[in-house]
Length: 409
Image (cartoon, rainbow, N blue to C red; front, side):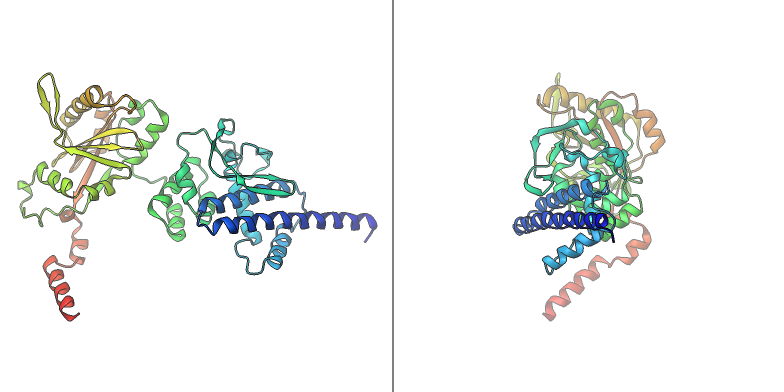
């Protein structure tokens, strides 16, 4: 081997040894901080290492096989180290490159990355003054005590992002290419505490692409784009109110069931209802008096949603959807917005919750109303499919079984 080749090899070995030292320092700092149980610190470490690896490996600075060499040396210097194989270092690199918009000082050229369409999102909207925990990287240091620059994008899920573990982030980056799809899976992971296997299954099934959205006029009536997207994603087209069982509350004939029965059960179990329709709902009241020019109005259920910063009026209907329900709801929303709404709140939203609805018909009839409204359907526990109901134990038999078990104890 010639002298020139030896010199190049020695230089490359020195670069790799320096890389090992830099990454090792970041790992040790991160382990100390992560011992405090802060997931965002671990994400910051992986983000910073990913940036460092990206900057040095994408341009061929380290040569081929560098990540295997670095990983092997790290394991020798830190016995028992887990999570830093060559594959995982590549995942950190992809994590950084997928969320490069969080790094205001990035020198990585968009065209050099694997997903330029993803990383080129709103790069110039970064707001350096908004802070949560970021990393700065230099030639010989990864500083985990600086801040990730959060982009000035209203729909970026800041809180959810830092709640999601790195392994889940890696699956989301690998499986979801569209930015809004990533937001969706991050939100679901944080909200539902999804396991990695469940998350992978949802991504494989394209849960984002098949999510059920309620027919509404939100895209026409909500001018704020971020709020419109939140409203569209928040409400589903159908709900299972399985905490309501008409048979158990003593009404056997469905003809005798009216909206007040369902409303009363929802009020009695309002926590269950809120958990069913989504997060950040606060119950204001039922049959809330709205009076204007001496005429009294009583919306069935009134909520406030913190994420939307808006009141949400829900009208319960036992039968099939009728267009008259929209007119009634429109009146409630007009009164709420002009007489009740606070100056800092967004316009109120109305939902018709009925037993059945023709989606195409709803979309056709609702489009010209000027207030944001949607129509969803619901089922109660006694309306579960027959095969599922048969598989469930009879309530009386279950009570007897529990009683027998208690006596045995």
